[in-house]
Image 1 (cartoon, rainbow over the protein chains, first blue to last red):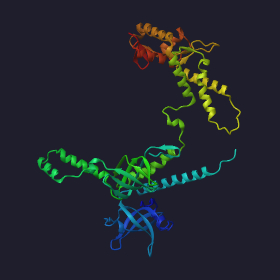
Image 2 (image 1 turned 45 degrees about the horizontal axis):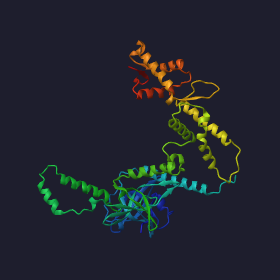
Image 3 (image 1 turned 90 degrees about the horizontal axis):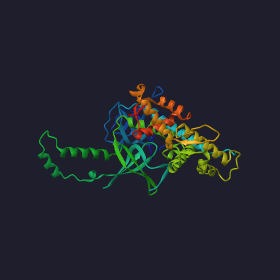
Image 4 (image 1 turned 180 degrees about the vertical axis):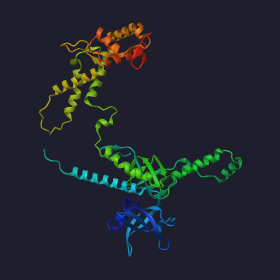
Length: 132
Length: 320
């Protein structure tokens, strides 16, 4: 009944194909194009001096007012689409133009760092204690 | 109501901020599925009475025509307030929701019973970013640390602070003015035996201080602190370890009063009063070398409470 939690991923991680199909994800990008007939939008993000484009299927979030050049957050499930590669079937598409992308990235990394630390700690605690 | 724990921290209420990804509305409540990227949970948000009321269109029309143009109309303002409240409670999928409330399990699913909830306007994700940065820190500093038993009580209940309490209570109840260490030693016995009880039965007996030695050590440390804080003092330092209880010491009280009365009359102190260090020096000359400033401060406070003396400034006292 409740969908799976949509974890934050960076656009370049999504298009690299490292995420399983059907995963619920959240990502961001600048709207560079929108084809309403095909319900297809393209979000772009810069990383390591490269532009990374994520294709979004917008059928479920239409009608949405496309502001070309504005920052968006998209939440949805990953899909492998023919001729496109990885695509996000959006459940939500929010315009967040004005967002501090660098700060958002920092926050995402901070969250990940915390979960990694906690996993390491739990793995350590699970190990049998040295015999006295 | 169920009780939940996180890492031995008992949970009373939780506080979440997340996107509405699911919505179900009933007459009495909204059920919002909230996703913050770390999980999804249902939140039961009860509608308050105002939200449930049906607007009677005829009633409001009539009132509008009564209000003069440009005049402040309480009816219209109330209607605006109601609409504003409804906006904060009625969310659509994709909007940001803040929920606070206890957790309960219903049909094997955990839910939050919202005691408070509202829509958060976060156009450039300031609130969400701040939350993502703050919450891990909160876990690191508090939730992921084991709950210290001493932290659950208002005062840190170290053995010494417990010992202090026990001894001071004894002084009060028995109006003790003079005592020797062995008079109060046995009072601290329970503190030592409950410490030894916490060691597991399986452990080998460890070579260390005996119960007797621990008791004497605790007593010694407690008396030291009580002395430092001026609660007790030794009028005469001799082989015989005798302590006075400052609060019950009538002689000390009278001496201090006399000093202030006499010296306040002198021209030197008439205007400003006697400085506490002057009083202390006089007490040490007349009464006992072993009265410390902390003990004197307690006596001065008690005299002041009885309106026997007045403090003219931070450290000066006088009598009329």
